[in-house]
Image (cartoon, rainbow, N blue to C red; front, side, top):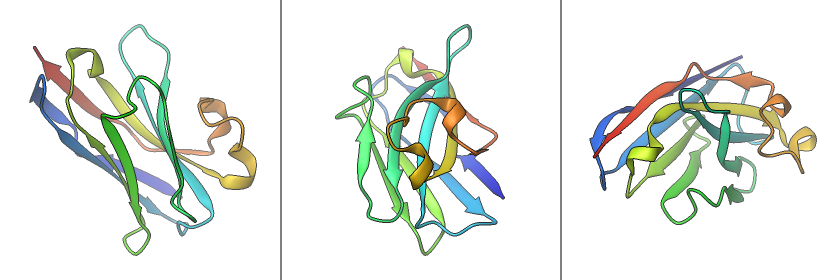
Length: 126
């Protein structure tokens, strides 16, 4: 089982990026895929979560209205569209997967996720 995150880079404040998380070794549909980020010296922060079965989404208040997560089950891929980026969004971004049955009520708790991608760096310049 593997998650591969990509799409990070350097962008100016106000810009946009789209991250991708490709899952291999399991089929989307029964898992929640979340995006987390971690900035230097800070704890890992949960940002979004999507139920890859019915497409239901949840967002942290810090990104609500700016970030959108979606999935394409035919490509076994989950996306994070990030708009209106700010310098404080600078961090390493990770995708993580867990079975829906195990993660309900614990969406923003990193220890609840079984599988993690390797992370992709997002840097937002002012």
